[in-house]
Image 1 (cartoon, rainbow, N blue to C red):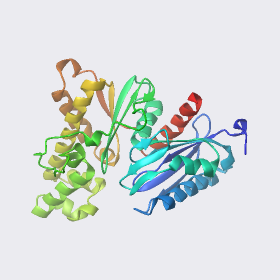
Image 2 (image 1 turned 45 degrees about the vertical axis):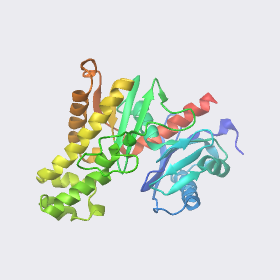
Image 3 (image 1 turned 180 degrees about the vertical axis):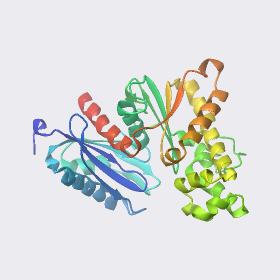
Image 4 (image 1 turned 60 degrees about the vertical axis):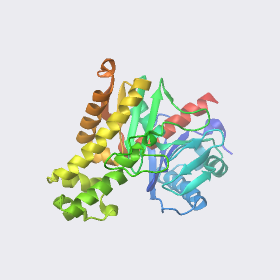
Length: 329
């Protein structure tokens, strides 16, 4: 095995929900190579772990480097992580439960592995290199299939004693909301403002004849109504679709207002595919709804910005977090 002095490369890995991305960095966080692969739905945890290892090896080939030079690997995974065991507790989009990702990858690459929640890693990337650079306290909200949340405070990711926290999308909301369905636990934010909730409401509008441009772009099948199609329909004049998105963004803003009272962040970073497709709507509505909700003394205490790093946020954040975690050992 290579000695630590010979190991000078760092890996950031974004497990994602529909794709995985591996990036190889030098000690100055210059990217040397990347490799992206699509996930295959509920393909099984072992198959998925094998694909992660393969993707890292392929990224090393692109970078023309020996995997034995990897000093540590940082992972961003969709779902809560147990930090003591290095286990992904659940990743609903992948169908994974209790997956020992740390043990597997440490045995494959012979180096420390630091798994974390993907939104935690994405916000940490924005804190180190992007839209929240150098802020004492920043809050991240990433609407997607669910709605991920994260907080970085004084350079550290806010987390529980043993597992990741800040499950922003599961904050409770009134169950009488127009977009929501109810469960035994009641309504939660992602039921009214996650991409699936937005797409479902848009499909209904299209079916009723209220969104002719969306029908032309994507039809009425919810599986075809993705962020780009929604943005194009709004651009082409579907007022009903714009109202749906603005309503969802206001729900996020009100929920953010509650968290502002708890954490007093200087900046709220919005990211994810929906935000990238409709940045103005989300920043306007989230900021205004949060300002309308909070106490007067908090109204001018924060700004709302769009993430800068896009697809690189998680891999850059995960690699930088691995450096910090290894230094703390």
